[in-house]
Image (cartoon, rainbow, N blue to C red; front, side, top):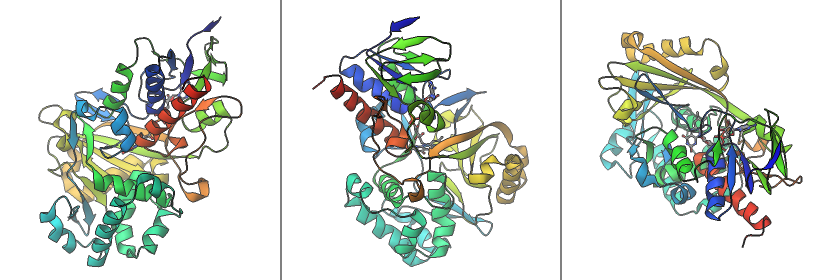
Length: 418
Ligand SMILES: Cc1cc2nc3c(=O)[nH]c(=O)nc-3n(C[C@H](O)[C@H](O)[C@H](O)COP(=O)(O)OP(=O)(O)OC[C@H]3O[C@@H](n4cnc5c(N)ncnc54)[C@H](O)[C@@H]3O)c2cc1C
């Protein structure tokens, strides 16, 4: 049956699709978001398993994200901050690297940590100061090279790059080779320096739920995979045809390519996130622990229940361990991860209970210059479809939200809005 379902149909209820729906609803348009899966949030969802809150892959919210601050009411998320800085595992010990601007008392330990030279630490401080003086637009408009090349250009030593930037930025970009565009590096670095790193008390999925709950009732249909789309409507896999004045594709990765036919959508990188339950936390703080020697396969680890006690039932701890790159696809990744963590923390690791693992094939767009780098991509196709998603801006919560705002603005203008 063919029916006019809404003014605008949006395919995908991730942060981009939900933001687009929110903006268009605010203009008074009737929107219907069609979501293939059984819930909203896309890559930002949280499962509740035996009292543990499991984000679908370890991720964090940076409170300095500018568009996110406009769209999401951060005050209502009950945000729990990470301890600034990181603990870097080198030579059988954890060494603290702190942000000297936030924890001046830790600056001495940072200078002594065998993570880089004193000159490297001065370069970090200089970089933070320099980026503080540049706007986000300026940063994203600068000439781009691979992040690894930019770090070398800035004089960082190979040791600093290998033992700190590789696991830290590699974990942010899911790119241990640091091929990602320097635009992304400088943007992310500025965001880390300017605000807090947090998770909502109810898990990352609370961000998407807040956007969803602000929409008129009935604006989202889950379990509704879209088979094909045109400028005037969509066909669901069930065969149902829905019509509208405009269609926005807010799917990601290969699905976005299939539905839009666009050839400027970059390939996506994989990640594997392992969750363990334990009676005793291997690290007492809610801080990022980095693999400073590149032994792998775990690149970073966090005791989530030390960031927010809500992430684990009373008396238990939740540990997240992230595996990047080809190792994330390897069938023996979990066994190798446990062996590595046993080397880090000893026999207590044998007591850790595997709670769940999330293997995400298309986790983040590949923003290496060879794949087109970071650039604002068009939100309308030649075929009259509108498009949003992190691949239009950059792979992050901020990029997805910004893309939703941009696509909504374009739809509104094309449909005759002011
Ligand atoms: C493990 C991991 C860690 C991350 N870490 C961070 C971090 O720390 N900080 C940060 O800022 N960002 C992080 N990100 C990135 C961030 O989560 C994403 O960039 C953002 O959520 C993308 O949102 P989106 O709406 O563009 O896409 P998605 O969230 O992928 O939404 C697309 C939606 O479209 C739906 N869909 C697809 N095809 C169809 C179809 N045919 N019909 C109907 N629906 C369809 C999907 O089911 C999905 O719900 C991370 C991502 C992952 C996976």
